[in-house]
Length: 307
Ligand SMILES: Cc1cc2nc3c(=O)[nH]c(=O)nc-3n(C[C@H](O)[C@H](O)[C@H](O)COP(=O)(O)OP(=O)(O)OC[C@H]3O[C@@H](n4cnc5c(N)ncnc54)[C@H](O)[C@@H]3O)c2cc1C
Image 1 (cartoon, rainbow, N blue to C red):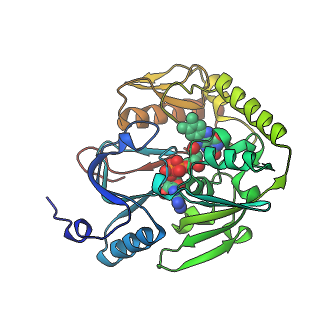
Image 2: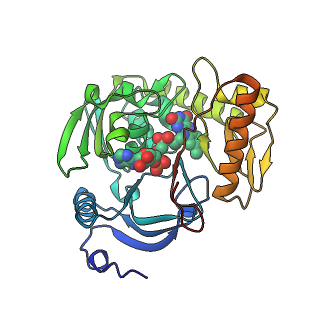
C-alpha cells in the first residue's frame, strides 16, 4: 500500500479522495477504482498537481465529467485529476462568454441563452464539461465547439500556461491539438452572436426533444460509442449488421439507437470491450468498414495489465 504522503499533505483548494470507483465518475457507470482522485478547486491546484506528478514520474489522468470514457475494470493507477464542479464559473462580456473548464456544457448553453447569445444551442444536451468538449471538439446537429471557441487558456505538459487562439487548436472531427498534446484546458472564451432569447430557447427545446426521441437517455451510456465513418453513420452500419439489441453481460447495443452501447444493469468494462469488438467484427464483415471508438478507453484490465 503506498503512502502518498506528498498528496496527503498537499494544501489544495479542492480535495483528494482515495480508491474511488471510476464507475461513480463516468456516465457509462463502469470501471475499477482510481487510486487517488484530486477534485481541483482552482487553477493553482491543477498546476500544482500536474507539476508534482511530473516531478515524481507519477501517472496522471485528466477527467472532465466522464461522459466519453470507458475505464477498464482494474481501474486507474496514479492520480486522476478531475476538473468538475469546483471549477465552473462563467462571465459574459458583450458577445463573449468566458467559462472555466469544469463548467457543464449544458450550463454554458443556458448562460448563453439567458444572455441572448446564439451559437451554443447545439451543446445543450451534451453532458460534458467545457474542457472535455474543447479537447474532443464535441458537436451535434451541425454545430461544433471549434466553431465557437475563440481562445483557450492551456496548461501545457511542460508546465507552462498560455493562451491559444482557435487556429492553433487544430479542431477536427472529435479531436484537437489539446487532446493530441495532452494539454489541460483551464478556461475558454466563446464568441457568439446576438440573438433573440425566445428563439434560442425554442431551438434548444427542439434539439432536446430530438435527443429524447432518438437516444436511449434513460440508460447509462457514453453517447455515440463509435466515430462516424466517412460518408456514413455508425448506427446505420450496426443496425444493418443485425446487431440492435446484441448483449454481452450488462452491455447492450441500444434498440432505440444502435450507435449507443448502453449499460442495462451490472455491466463491467470487460462486457463493453467484448461487445465493442463483436460490433466491430460484424460491421467489418458486413460492410468492410472499421468502426473506431469515439469513447476514450483508459485504465487497466482486472489483474493489472494496461493495454
Ligand atoms: C447521453 C450522451 C450524449 C452525448 N452526446 C454527444 C454529442 O451529441 N456530441 C458529442 O460530441 N459528444 C457527445 N457525448 C460525449 C461526451 O459528452 C463529449 O465527448 C464531452 O465533450 C466529453 O466531456 P467530458 O467533460 O465528459 O470529458 P471526459 O469524458 O471526462 O474526458 C474526455 C477526454 O477529454 C479529456 N479532458 C477532459 N477535461 C479536459 C480538460 N479540462 N482539458 C483537456 N482535456 C480534457 C480527457 O482527458 C479525455 O481524454 C455524449 C455523451 C452522453 C453520455
